[in-house]
Length: 423
Image 1 (tube, rainbow, N blue to C red):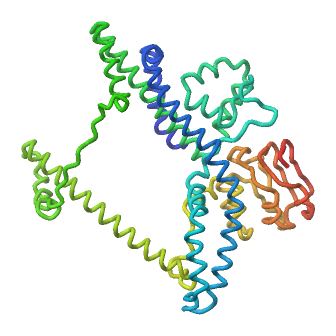
Image 2: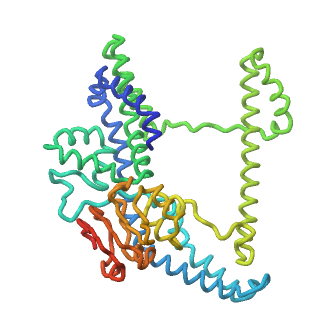
Image 3: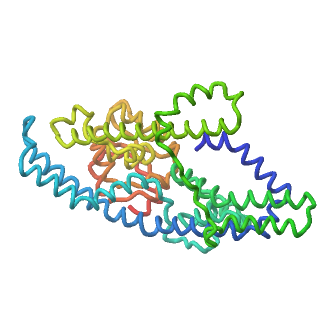
C-alpha cells in the first residue's frame, strides 16, 4: 500500500488538482451525481452484505468448524494406522467419504474465511453512536468517508474540532493493509465515472459548442452507462477457428517479424491468429497445472506420503493472515524461539523483547500496526509464553478478549491493560 501511494500519489494529486482547478466538480455535482450514486449504492449493498451477514455468520461458525475438523483429523489418523498400505481399510474410506460429503459446508466456510479474513472494519464502541458528532468509526465510517466520498467530504469539513477529524481519519488508519487496498479500489471504482465524465463534460463545454451539443454529450453518457436497463447492450461475438493453431500460427509468427511492411488487413489477420495461439497455450498451461495439482491432491490423501509433497496443504490465505494479524501469528505458533520472535517483530514491530534472564516482555508501545489489530484472546499469550512473561503492556488495545485469570501463573512485574474494555 505504501509503494502504491508513493507511485500513484503524484498522479492522483495532479488529477484531483486538475479536477478542482478546471471546475469540473461543478459539472459533476450538477449533471453526473446519479452516475456516482448508482455505483455507490450497489457497492454499499455488497459491503453491507459482507459486514452484516456473511462475516458474522463465518465468525459464529468458526469454532464449531475447528472442533469438527480436529475430530476428523484425529479419526482419520487413527483409521490410517501404521505402515505404507495401512490406509487401505474400510474405516479409513468411510471416514474420508463421510467428510467429503458431510464436511462440504464446513469446507465452503473455510474457503470463504481464507479469502475474506481481511474484510473487517471494526465496530463502534459501546459509548459511541454512528450518527452523533463523533467520528463515523467502523464499517459505517468506511461507507460514509470512503464509498460516498463526495458526500463524506462535506461531512468531514463540518466536523467541529481536530479530535473529531483525527477520529475520522482513524477510520482508515486502523484497517489492515488488505482492507485499505480494497477500500481504495472500491472508492476509485465508484468515483471514476463521476470524475472522468465531469472532466470530459467540462472540456466539451469549454470548446464553445453550445448548450444543445453539450446536453447531447451528457445524454450520450447516460445512455451508455445505463444501457443495460434499455436492452441495448451488445455482447461481443466470439468467432474462433481452432485450426489456426496448427495451420497458420507458425507461419504468421515468422511473418510478424517484418510487420512494418505488412498491410493493415494482413496485420489484423495475423494478430487474430496469434491471439488464438495464445489462448491455446493458456489452455494447455491450465491443463498441466490441474494435472499437477491432481497428483498432489491424490498423494495428500495418504498420510504416509505427505513427506513426498511437503506435508499437508497450507492455505495461502491463512499464511497471509499470520503476517497481517498478530493473533493469528501467535495462535499458529507451536513453540517460542528466537526465529519466531524475529519474524513477529519484523511483521508487527518490536513488540516481543527477551531479557537476559530468558523472560519476555510483550509491549505494543512500539508496534508498527494499529493497536486496534491486537484483538485476540489472552489464552493465546498464556499458551505461547507459559510462565516466561514478566511484562505485559496492552495500552489502548480495546479489541483484546478473554479472562485476565489466564495470566495468574505468569511472573508479571508490570501489567498495563488500560482501555481493554472487553477483558
